[in-house]
Image (cartoon, rainbow, N blue to C red; front, side, top):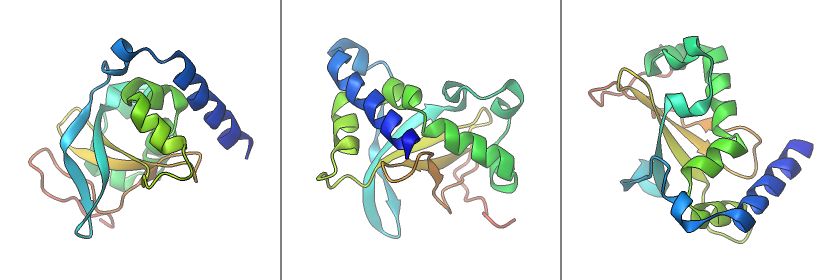
Length: 150
């Protein structure tokens, strides 16, 4: 509960100090929408793994390793829910939608890009302190799905 309160305070403080020129410095939102089960659920924000603040060994991993390593998955999910990351890669409008309980926003979706070009999608919302891996979203550099249960 305290983590959620602290996170909300940081996000709200960011609204007060956000400068329009800084808001566009993040990796940006892709044009495409992340689609799960045939429906659009929100913008997909590309985040290079280096932006997550992970240790050097974890930064060199791949999406193939992510789906098989619970420790790596926990590190990535935790880092994705970090208020510092959210402030660095989102726009003020995205943060407002995330923080507004009346918003129809389904959360933020970060496409974490690993060094080999593979990726996973992590969902961040106000209901959870950490991000959550979107099962079935792991892809190789060529875009081929990586099985979650392998």
